[in-house]
Length: 262
Image 1 (cartoon, rainbow, N blue to C red):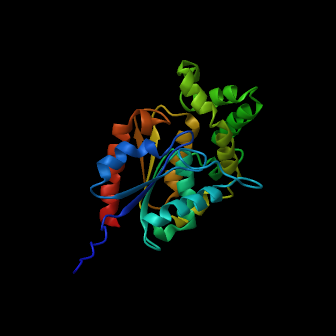
Image 2: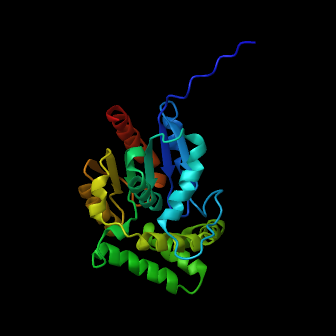
C-alpha cells in the first residue's frame, strides 16, 4: 500500500497568554476568528485553568512562567519554530519576558496593558500605585477581602461585591496565585532600556477607561520598543473580555500586517 504524507501545516503559529485570574479560554473568540490563517496555541499559565499551581522553592519569577510556557508549546511547534505572541495584563508581562528571552523566535508582539511595572523606576507614580495595591492585598484581613482589592482596582470600586457568590468564590480561590504573580512582576530585573533588543513588529494596546497606572506604562512601553505602534480601545483593563469584539478586530488587523512584514 502506498501512503502519502500530509503536507506540514503552513499556517504560522500564534501563542496567546491570558491575564491573572483567567485561563486560555479568554482567547476562544479570537482563536475562532484567526484559525484559517494561524495555528493558535493558547496556554494556561501556572495556577490557572488546567495548569497546576507552581511548586517553587524560593522567589517566584517570570522565568518560571516562561519555562512552563515553553514546555507547553514545544509539542505544537517544530524545533526552533518562530511564532507570533499575544498577551494581556500578566500574560502581557510574561510575553515581554518570553520575547526578551528568545527574540529571534518572536515574529510579532501584541500586548494589552502588560502589568510590567518593574520596567519603571521605583519612584515612578505608576509603579508606586501598584506597590500600594499589592500592600493592600497583603494587609487584607482575609483572602476574600484581598480579592475584593484586586478585582475592584482593575475594574472599579464596588464591582466585586456585585458579583454572584459563586464567582466571588472562584476568584478568591485564585488570590494565592495572584500574590505570586505580583512577586514575579515586581522582582523582574528588566528596565525599559532592555526592550531596545525587541525589534519585531509590536502593538501596545490600552483601554480608555483603564487605571492611569497601566495607561502610563503602556505609553512608556510603546515609546521604548523600537518597532511599536500604540492603540487605545474602548473599555478598561479588562477590555479583551468586556470589549472582546473591538480588541480582537484590532489584534487581527495588526497580525495581518505583521504577517506580511514577517
